[in-house]
Image (cartoon, rainbow, N blue to C red; front, side, top):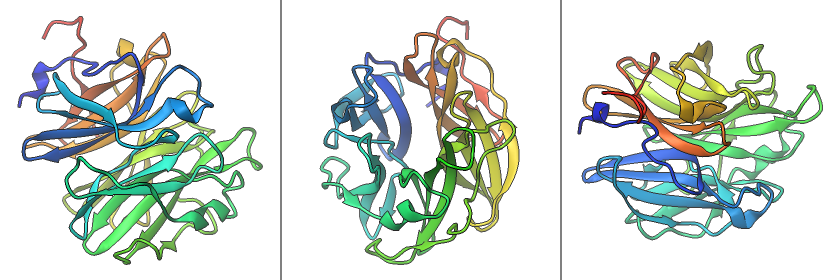
Length: 296
């Protein structure tokens, strides 16, 4: 399909659409996201993991919740031991914890299975919460990136990125590589930290794009050769558009024939969130699709 014919935002609903994740299949695109309703952040009944299917990012079919209420932030859907696994988190009731659901057909999903609970007790995670899981499969090893929160050592609550991996087919035994300190923390541009990462491989290099900052959220990236040691590269500049007027984040990247594609959550001046698309030849420099009120 020709993505350049589409216009941003590609999908907007009465609900707030957050935390997109895309799984490309032979017949189209499975879009997972956090459905946030009723503008009350604190109530579990206003949050759920949702799924819709599209062939063209114009028509969206069978939009429905696939989790109970009180869950959010789907990560990368992976194939693991012959089954589909989708990571996400409990939310907003405390303690927020990581979990995943299993499916054989992308239609029927298991009840949440909680995992990596030991990440709640890392010394730098004083808030004892774990959010925003991202799965990356590298051979027979599964990596998980997650976010914890320091609520003591900074002027404000600060989100920090952690990392663990497992060789266990049952996903029960994990090695946390960030016990003593986080993988990525605050920066001058983002004193309140990071969240919502996406990781993809470009030839012999891994690229991580993540939401940097909370109040003034934007995108930044880092690179790695082994998924464990990362070099921060700085902010990713993107074109200003009305659907991202307040802030933007929660990127997800996948590969098309000629380009990398990114789906992004944006918040407009009315504090409503929707999804738009960007494209890139190198995975680092990104261009927006045109807005709906612009000429192609």
